[in-house]
Length: 150
Image (cartoon, rainbow, N blue to C red):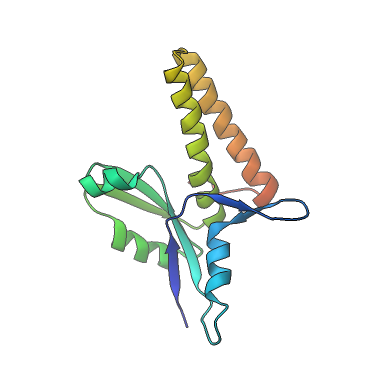
């Protein structure tokens, strides 16, 4: 009772049939963990942000947002993860943090393609701005309005 978990998996799964709606990885994990007899329902949080594993391991600065259901859980995760090289903040929006954590990587790829193809700063800025607006729209369509702190 009172179990909490934190997913560091960045990605989105989709329904295999029907409308092909997105499924949060944290929801999949929560569903899998409660399949065993007597297993507690795990209150899932997510850790998302600019934190590539090999750079974190080297001690390069990184940051993350914890998306949680309750402020007290966010505080626990922040105390666990926050260091001088890894800045962590919490928001009470699991879906917003998880979706933005996954989709920002797609926008980052687009920005990188602009660099690789030699496009100018305006094109790169447009990719980022439009990408952020599309992320916001995706979140709203599939999960309702999100908190702005994400």
